[in-house]
Length: 78
Image 1 (cartoon, rainbow, N blue to C red):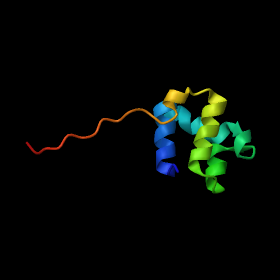
Image 2: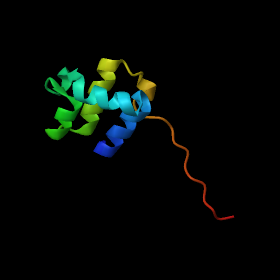
Image 3: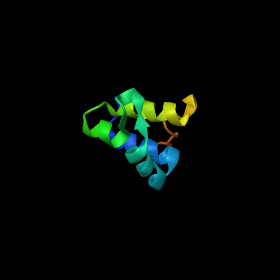
């Protein structure tokens, strides 16, 4: 399950902050009932399903569908 905050992080990482918002409100996703991502999320569609629908229609490679690797923070303990 993907939280909505994770959905937006994935969108921003893949498409950039500005373009991700344009895609979310204008790109119609047949996989989630012919809705935009924003409409699907508002209707309660699982954020993971919405993300994968965006990936499919935008041809996001499989290796980037989980998002970019984020290095863990190092402990300040020595």
